[in-house]
Image 1 (spheres, rainbow, N blue to C red):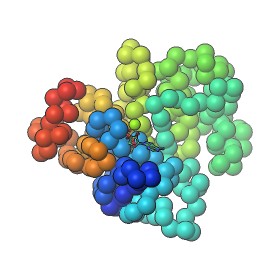
Image 2: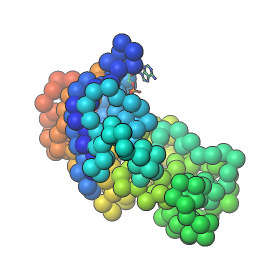
Image 3: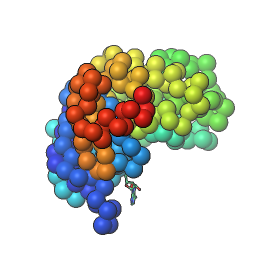
Image 4: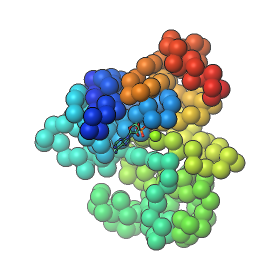
Length: 240
Ligand code: ADP
Ligand code: MG
């Protein structure tokens, strides 16, 4: 579903991604971890074309991002993205947040969009909040809305960038629970997170990044059993 092939990226002189190669197959859940500044967000943003890269290739569902004939906005609409900060439209009610992309990008009529929005709000347990504004919800609830909004677009893959790291601790689990359910239903997911409990529960593979490199790309059992690299071992010993 996602193929990242020898990708390198620079910000000016700064080499932020160095020969990154990995892939995510359909239905797989891949957790990306590593120290702050190691390039995790940059990597995940290159996958849906939010960041350019200078070398290598990325294909999403067989479509090469670099191919000039690729309709990037269309491809991007099929890749769900959930960030650390919820990025809901503050002036729109929850239902409108969920309908907007469906109507504007996918061309659904209001009734169809509303049906989908209602079903997904139910799925994340927030149907009672449909007519509120984002500011009236807690951080955990807003993040669940952000996930529902992404799912409204029928994504073929979901990317998460530290979706729980801006939340108060008591709200982390309600968001992780939604993600665990999604993983168990077979959604293809690439998740930047330091929630190793989540990784242990549902990850198929764990990628460890350091200074722009993919240092480790292992099955969950191998990674938690004993990472090969010293850098990953040190990282794990600090966060576990
Ligand atoms: P992570 O998500 O692992 O914390 P990032 O991908 O956000 O790391 O950033 C990797 C490195 O790239 C950091 O050193 C960061 O300062 C740098 N960086 C990120 N965005 C930019 C940018 N737009 N311009 C220059 N440097 C950047
Ligand atoms: Mg980041």
